[in-house]
Length: 556
Image 1 (cartoon, one colour):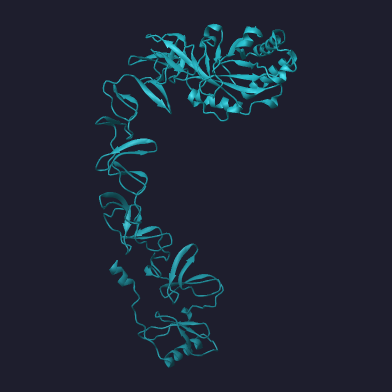
Image 2 (image 1 turned 120 degrees about the vertical axis):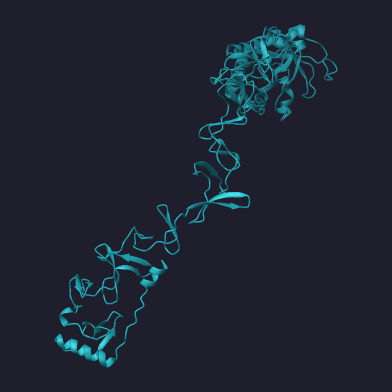
């Protein structure tokens, strides 16, 4: 382009006439035009020999001979119409105001250039940038002229790519130039634009027929890495591995690592690693629960027992392995295996033979009774026992125990079986029925599930002793009415009373919770009441440690 630039530079030197000479010529021109104003030349416009007179007339002369052009060839700048005029081999254009057009102008959507005399220019011209004007005047746009490209505005482009061709800072096409190039920064390879300097980031790119991936920093990745939830592998050159085995891993044609599937009779696990001698059934974890999957047909074991490596497991209707659950005459422990020895869970003591069959349940598990008077009790200690919870007292729902629902929540959280009881103030059958209905209402409102019975707490106290006769004739009907009401509502009813009242004043056939701790009340079992017909034996009132023992047989 250097040679081109030389030819495009304006280098002609214009001879400057003396004022007297110009005046003489100007007067002669104006005389020929019959203009009365014959003053001196006002301005020398340019080196192309066009001079403007004070009367807005133009005259030209030859630099060598100073011969004036005849008046008929002089352009009248006062014309009021747009027009093109061809004068002495050059085209001129005047606008709607009659002004001679000079410099760059857009005429009828085309770009033209005019010198200071108004003559239209052609070929390469430099204004603020290089332009190329066709022989008929308009600038070339969006096209190549030799090794140079003119943009939409007619300007020659520099330092950019044009349809796969690169032009340098001089605007010249550079043969063999590449828009993107590999660059090494330390030990890291990147793929960088030679135009912008930017590197590829967070994307795959097909380069030389191979796929490469670049991370958020533009680093070419190698080894294993994840993209959009899939795992890929690129070798040390950065090229993606695909469509075949690489060691113990198989990669699909799109480069994804195969996981948890069979490939031509070979199984790859969830980590994508080939498992020699793999069986079709495999363990699968879902959160903190386990499932058993057939990897060939993608089916899961459901509603069935499965023998896994010599141990039996049971899977529920959703395919999850059950734990700490009785299934018919069998029990699945905390690890899901069918138990083949005794198990204590949820207040039950399962006596299990070596074949896994439940023979019986224990009759001597310990527990506690709790109420608001005990405060915020840590019930987690009774996950292998049971709890009896006070629900309230009297015949009003306002008399619900303030810790009743909180204690239920704890039992539910720890998987502890529980029963509930109501302290009775009933002195006749009507009040007994009213109390029972209040009890039932509170139970239903709380959502309680008392698997270990719903109990009436019958104790003598000054309030009742002053309002009724404490004997069998008075007490037994009250107890029977209360328990009948409870039982008819779908709950398992029982009675709490001391040993003496059961012997003398209460003959109901409902479950018995016998309070009997002997003379010392020292927290030790004073008497075994399992043969007495007591479902529960409360053997101490001291503290809330183990103060109750119950016979599991009554609750099977």
